[in-house]
Length: 184
Image (cartoon, rainbow, N blue to C red; front, side, top):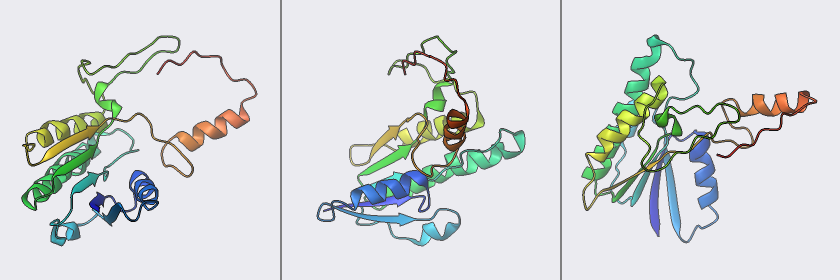
């Protein structure tokens, strides 16, 4: 049985992941941990095979006042968690990053293609903090401690945070829906 620790106990992705894996109780054991205070530092990480780090600051209005919060939560925290995991013998650390590290915003009607060769160029504090965390985390990788970075686009579903609910409401209220050839 694979033991997985998910950081961000109340996060949208973390709870969805835990719910999905609960279908396979003979294959996976999943624990979650809240990262909002320093209590996580007292939790032993020994015995876990994987740490999935999804705790982060997201959906905040861009402001220089919150840049330090992005750095603390989106860079310093995952690095500290990864160091603790590596020291405890965890074999894999999965970090939920974001497509925002590319900084690409496609114009309507114009295609933006992102490949493994696309150079990151984040434009927001969120994207910059996630990219900085990726760089620091990759320094921790070795043959006994693998780092996996996921860069998803907008994550949505029922009751998700962020702009998705507003987009759904707008689509329901707008009688005309533009024909856009979206090639993402």
